[in-house]
Amino acid sequence: MKNLLLRSLTGSIYVGIVLTALLVHPLALILLSSLFCFLAMRELLAMQQIRSAVPVWVGLHTVLTGGTALLMYYQPQSDRSLILLFAGYIILFVSALFNRNETEGVHSFQVNTSALFYITLPLLLINRIHSQAAADQIPYTLLLFVGIWSNDSFAYLFGRSLGRHKLFERISPKKTWEGFMGGLLATLALAWGYSAWSGTRSLAFWLGFGLLVTVSATLGDLLESLLKRSAGVKDSGNLLPGHGGLLDRIDSLLFVSPVVFLYLSLN
Image (cartoon, rainbow, N blue to C red; front, side):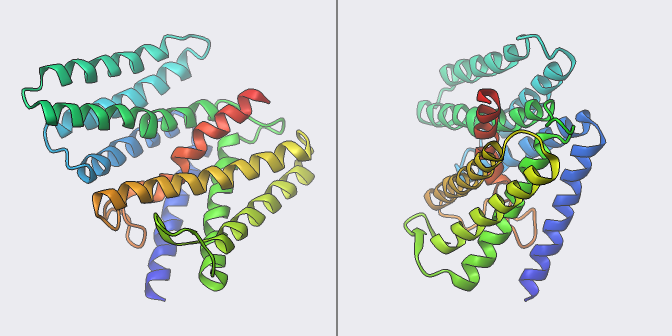
């Protein structure tokens, strides 16, 4: 009971911070996503036991996220924003060549290159999605986050109370099909309710949106569980009481973001 209260309090503070960033100004979201990148990269490098030049790598990914998002904000029609991402990759490539410890250099290059797609790009795409809005001017990012929170909350509740059949026991022993279905039904109900209230797009579009949020959120959670299992740790960190590290909190977001971006681009 005490852990549930602590988890709820921490979750409420996190939700409040995210909603503030989403509703105040686009620059607030750029700042928040840069902070998320900074914290998430520290946890990822620690899990992967990379100790050399950690401030450099954390700083590089943070600058790539914030800098590219700023360029996209001030020059939305320009492709120049991609220059920073390519420059970041070149820096990673050259640094691996000049690392005298070949094993360490290759490992660092692999982790940092993966982080470009796992952390940096998804957090960057959140800002890209935020520049779009439904016909009633509600940001898609708000709908995306609410969908993730709805899925996570009901998956947790259904899993604890009804969970019997394991979803992916080898990677995440606590996840169940009952929890997955609870999260899915809640998110689809939310999508149906929003469709009926707003009258924007079609019901099929919003149900597809909800379905993709649930499936990709679950996959993102499983991927982070795989990373933690391979690293032999229970949580990615201890920043958030009751939740673990920041990666434990945004693991779903990191997979949902690219999927929703593609879905919106195709629709």
